[in-house]
Structures are given as C-alpha cells and as structure tokens.
Length: 256
Image (cartoon, rainbow, N blue to C red; front, top):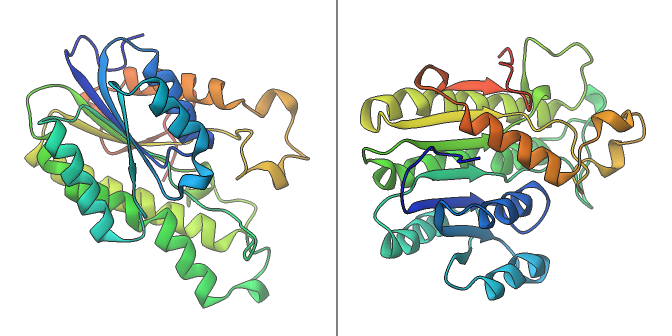
C-alpha cells in the first residue's frame, strides 16, 4: 500500500515516536519503499530505546530528534533540523497524548476537577499539534500530495458524549479537533495539496489504555500493529474533500 500514491522521494515525520502508536508508525513506514527519509521525535532517550535501536539499524533512513512538544522553541528547532535535510515534507503524524500518569488520572466527577490537571491535558493533548502545524507549513508548501494527521479520540466528540466523565481528556481532544479543523482551512489556502485529518485509533493496547482495558471486548482491543495498519489505510484513502475532517479507524467520519 502506497500511503501517498506514487510520490517519489517521500519524507515522513512521526511526532511522539518513542513508544505505542507512534513507534508503530515508524516501524511500518520503515517497511514502505516509498519513504526515503523518516524523522521521528522523542522526549526522553531512556524511554525511547526501541526507537533509537531502529535508528541504529537504519541510519540512512531514520533520523531521531529530541523535542519536548510542550516547548515551542524545541518544536521550532526540530523543524529547523528537518529543513536542513529535506526541502519537502509529505507526511506528518502527530501521536502525542496523555490520559494518565503517576500524578494524574481522568476525572470521574466534578469534585475531581483541578486547574493544574486541566491545564496539563491541554498543554499536552491540544496545543502541541497546532504548533507543529504552524512551523511545518513551509515544508508542506509544494505541489505533491501530502498529509498532516493527528491522533485524536472519539471521546473528544461533543455530539457523541453520552457517558460524561473524563472532563480534561475529553475537552482537550475536542480542543485539538477545533484547532486542527481551523488549521486545515488555512492550509487549504496556503498549501492546497496538504490534507489535514484527525484520526481516532480505537482502543489500542498501549500504556495509555492499559488501566481501562478490563471492560473492552477482545475484538475491540487492537494491537499497535493493527491500529497503525488501519490508520495508514485511512490516510491512503483521503481525498481533497476530507481535509479538516475527523475519522475513525475504519474510515467512517465521526461527529464533532
């Protein structure tokens, strides 16, 4: 499957590639002959050992860049590094996100809402993607078909929210959707061959979902490899009218 058609010398970027879905994208892109240069970002080297091992095995194909996506200066510096090696970018996939860590968990009720935790959700889940869109725009301004895709979540759909809870995660993903929908409109004017898409991966067996897998039917818990395969198929099938839209892993459009 050619993700971007017959584009030659295709370049790709995976943001947040140290583990999970991001690392899965790197693995599969490395197997596709159309990609000649792949960039991948990570935050901490000690949590990106598998990614760095891939770089050591594919030094001419994979370049890894350390970048904290909550710091715009580091995003700008990473894009500058990419621009030193290539003049065009054909695919960028933003995979950064947080649901829980050792200091935070999704809120189940209004009583659990805290300003600092809400801000953290937006700092990681919403803002970085649009900053990448801002700084990557010059590399997307070319005549080849290209795609800027962001991993979102179905729980970020306002219309689909029937269960409540998870205030910060839901709201930050809804904000991500709005930011990238707005970016898609500007990209349509300034880089018309670039399609911007938001992707729901389904429940995937990663660190993010592990505490919440107990009630997920086995057939609805996807391996990373399956998730990435499905999302690459969605990306391959995008047309001009799909830019700025929100898609599920099976290619269906999701409500805002």
